[in-house]
Length: 139
Image (cartoon, rainbow, N blue to C red; front, side, top):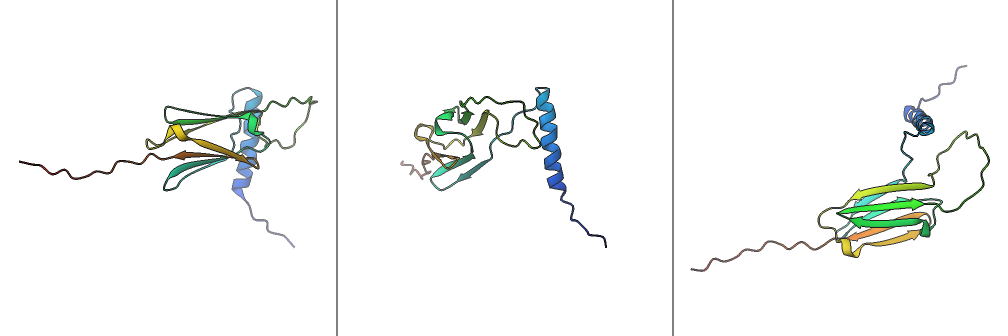
């Protein structure tokens, strides 16, 4: 009796993408994998959550300039590694840099960051916009 197996094309594409990235990295052309991020807005702030497993708090740096939030990670641990023949290599590299464009109402002077269980959480408060008001014209 023949067993039918459901084909999952996206899983296959993911494997192909990783293999292509590794092949291009050998030639020095492919960008390194970036940490996954969520960016959302509440009534009072903009929040960026970045998954950075394997990085310590002191290995992360944040910079805000020209309405752009830049988050960098640099692992400082030096381990003596022997040649490895990877079957699968998905972990973040030793260095990454992500940039996020912030909206005009972002209060760049009061940005705060928290780090907990491999997730960096950046809070960018919003500046209250002055509401339009009607001006009476006097004669």
